[in-house]
Amino acid sequence: MSEFTYQIRAVEKHDLETVYAIDHACFPRGVAYAKSLLKDLLGSPQACGYVVESPAPSVQKGKSGKPTPFGFILAIRYSPRAANIVTLDILEPYRRRGVGTELMKRVEADFRIKPTQVITLEVSVKNTAAQAFYRKLGFEILEKIDNYYENGEDAFEMFKSLEFQRRA
Ligand SMILES: CC(C)(COP(=O)(O)OP(=O)(O)OC[C@H]1O[C@@H](n2cnc3c(N)ncnc32)[C@H](O)[C@@H]1OP(=O)(O)O)[C@@H](O)C(=O)NCCC(=O)NCCS
Image 1: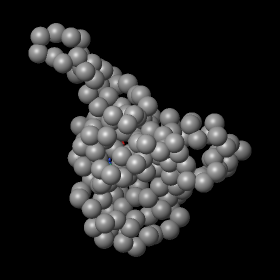
Image 2 (image 1 turned 90 degrees about the vertical axis):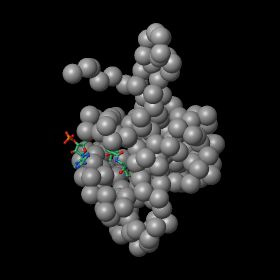
Image 3 (image 1 turned 30 degrees about the vertical axis):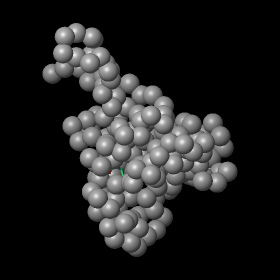
């Protein structure tokens, strides 16, 4: 089996088409984000995020030499002490290899530099895999939000207190 290597870089405005395509591969219609919203996020000074990609193949015949993105995370600070994970998407073949955890660690590290007290996120009540993932990272369910998604699905709001983590 070939070695699994990847690189993480900050997301940029020019990643719009890439993150839109990955988001729509990871979520059904009505849960995936509209392109206009992703565009606004990529342009927001309050937002931060990362793209994860396979390194460029060495330039040889038939190979483009470009890295291949296969996941991303977007988060936004919505008050001086609170931030929200807008979305975290890893394409299916690349899951269960620790990449989602690594992206969450990057974003948490960014928010710890500024004194963020709480990170929140919303996850579909049907998305038990992501709920298990976030629970493992220390998130807890705060409440259920009815009809959260455009397609009518309910969501759980989850949170993690970074202050508590620091004192622990
Ligand atoms: C949720 C998601 C981001 C996890 O990314 P990932 O790179 O596969 O996660 P990791 O490999 O870092 O998983 C860490 C741990 O989370 C838990 N976990 C992850 N996926 C899981 C699943 N499908 N079922 C149960 N537990 C899961 C496990 O405890 C896992 O550790 P293990 O593999 O040693 O058992 C990925 O499955 C995904 O992109 N799903 C589609 C989009 C989505 O649901 N995003 C989140 C909602 S906003």
